[in-house]
Image (tube, rainbow over all chains, first blue to last red; front, side, top):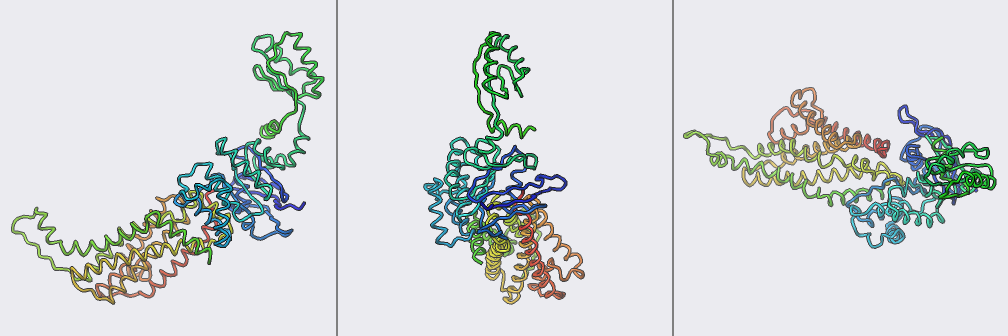
Length: 306
Length: 259
């Protein structure tokens, strides 16, 4: 598949601070990519450059439409900023109409699409109200509608759900699920769970550099390791035993805190047998014993803390 | 062109909904009407103030209509200018500060249309407010003080209107350069006042400065000599406005958002 978006050596320097350090990646048409990273990793700066709001210090951003790179990306992208701000004196309907016309729709198309999108994002009943009275979730949904009203090839979202309560977050995520069937989506987030829910590609960035990128399934398979999670009782015998398990030969890595432990092991079956036997011998009381695979969350934490 | 219309319609709507179309013309009208009325009733006002020593009489030369009109214009140069700058100062910086501009500028919009719409709406607000206020002043002056020479009044009004346009353009330029509203007001008001003060001090060196416009307008009314450099001041002011506009366009393009 040809990439829709091709980014090469993208760099942004503010005075002497380099926020984005030569990152390169591509986003295939029809995919959904998540730009994942801790706060301050350079996500918003990258997104702003992609949306054309910031001039890159170095590097190139190419958007291909119909196989050919375009000079002006703006007609083909839809962008939703981190904290969408509107004119509080406009109604939702007026703003959507205005955004549609600015994006190049005819007056008639804009009016038609405004109605459609207000319904699609669940603001049909609130269209006539002033945006000043909207809640955060409503603003986010209106922001999505304004980004999509001109049927962009690529939808760029900056932390679309980070500021929302669980209900609003679910609304926006399920909207995104629907949208991604029709549009290529690139969004940034610091919550891995959101990325896992809707994306198939992830780009982890850390301190302005790409730490890890690729297909989500692929990464999950490649980086998942057998893990045993345990929780023991609070008495001394159990705690002492737990503190000592890290020294066993089959344990590759151990994280022990209080009555809980998480062990990365070479072989789950062998390890659980030995642990159980050992525990019985030491009269350890288990509260929880779980064997499984390390999650992306673990990988994310590892990348972030490395 | 279509985008210019869209932006312009939005600016007009915003000025309407924030009541700028109501209060700015009203303040200008009030300023204009007050001068002739106060002048006309000044003797009565002084009499009723009542704290004058007995036997003292003040004889005031009743001012001519043209003089009252000239005084009105000087009113506009202080309070009028202040109102103007305050009502226009956040026109460009406000959208950048709030973040609306991020959404607008990620769409395929023309920066020239965007800035031109701001300019046009600024010029319309100023023109309507000033014409209303000036017409009010003229009407009351003619009614209460005495006739005013029509040709002189129109010429003076046009020159003064150009000065207001110049001050408005300056405010929008500063608004595209700076973010804090107080800073914008301070710089634009300061620059406009400085220009007209400097002309007052050394007119011979600054005959072509835009700061000469208010004084030139007043000389039309007072029919004094020494009104040299009219064409020069006119041309330089219009040139400055064009340069301010071009500067604002490139600043808007350069500083799309505050990130």
